[in-house]
Image (cartoon, rainbow, N blue to C red; front, side, top):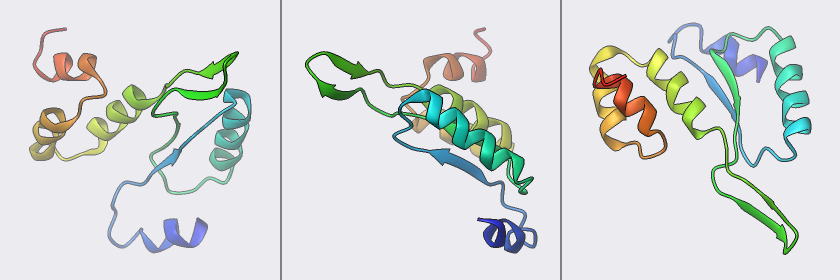
Amino acid sequence: MKSFAESNKKSQVPIIVVLTQAVPKKKAAEMKTMIEKENLDIVKVVPLLAQDMDFDEEYIAKAYGLDSLIDVMTEVLPSELQNTLQNVQIASLESKKRQLGLQ
């Protein structure tokens, strides 16, 4: 990951590290902290679980993090692409409302 972040300095494309299927949350938080300690040229580390994950009849891990990812993407995208993101994303109604000035 270090070499990728270093090679990106020329193009200066914002890098968001997404930790997918980040369960259990405690382990995901540990991995996030470990990546952040590397001091890489990245915008943010976002752990998420895109859909509920059914482990058995007794335990279901609930989806989380997509709204955080949309917020981070909105922050780093050029203004001319932010409307496109809000038009196509379905993960965060709150983000759409903010974009429209309804909050």
